[in-house]
Length: 437
Ligand SMILES: Nc1nc2c(c(=O)[nH]1)N[C@H]1C(S)=C(S)[C@@H](COP(=O)(O)O)O[C@H]1N2
Ligand SMILES: [Mo]
Image 1 (cartoon, rainbow, N blue to C red):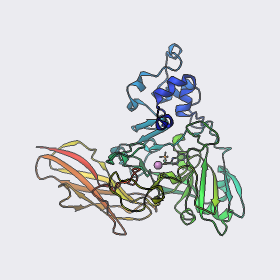
Image 2: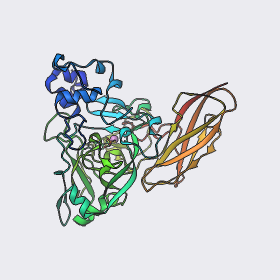
Image 3: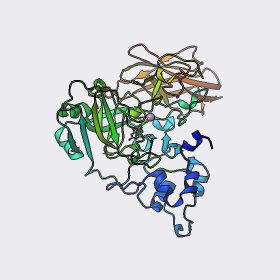
Image 4: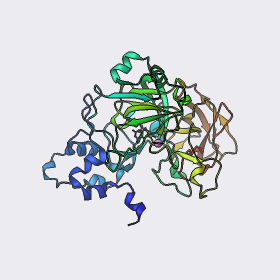
């Protein structure tokens, strides 16, 4: 076996084969969540039942470690409790995205918020005893419970976009390694929490602070306690922006276990990886953070445009900061057939930490563009919603294309700006529509 293969993440089959008794614990993580019983609950059987979408009446007859036929049929049959209609891209770690037409709501329901895990989520999460430590280059290091956060700081509610830096990777040619996200590693839920900036101010950030470092309770895929799956951070200036939350509620309820329960960062407009889930510690550092997935080529792009397939030296990669201007058509679903010659088109647009000025649609492969009605964002960091009625001159095959332009005059490109790791694909979203006579 080549070195590369040995270290590749294991899929479900391989894992069950090797270690059947503990496989579903390892694959899905055990979660005990006091006020939301029913999610992957702890015992292997309950975990399995939750993933299969129902209790298993004849479970006593199941050989230990048998892979249910539902999995054998493929990942599309994996049901994640509390999620609805997501496409599972990887089972270990769990990664699942949302088809565009299920993102039609202005506020993304928790059931449709994508899941991007780098490791194994924590088990036995107890929101009441969970603590967050702020330390490093601060005057007053502190350890706070979620109760302390609620009591000592302004509690705010914000609609915030979380988008994975690798959203759209599936369309890179040559292919980039990693989860093959198409369109749906993005969501805009309503988050409740306290401002990261307020907490950092209370701790007293000292002169010389450069970057934050975020730590969490999920485990590395290897199971080794001294290895972290991911620990990212933010430049101090971004961390002190009022838009970032330390969140304990998602759409008015405790966070979904796969979205970081009981506590996470939500950093709108920057790669989703900045929004550390299962947050336990924020350290203030006097240098750019160098935790796992901060260094090398992770969440980085070349410092100049490169040709598809071009090799780029490691030192020429820079950390991705804001996410680029982008739009998504959420209605109609692609491959819709209509009769008649008109169709309402709806979707969302966002641009890092900027506002979107306009979204235009084309039904003639980009030759002409029409304007849409575009809403203002509900708050800084929320996506905006566009609507327009499009008309088709005669029956046949059409594509509806969407193009957003932000308040700095920057538009989405037609083609992907290729980079080795497949980040930041903000090319036009295209949906197919067939008009029947
Ligand atoms: N602790 C922890 N935080 C994490 C991750 C992770 O694997 N572990 N994944 C990050 C990445 S890459 C993304 S895109 C977002 C996704 O958030 P979601 O799973 O709630 O959609 O979480 C980020 N926070
Ligand atoms: Mo991500």
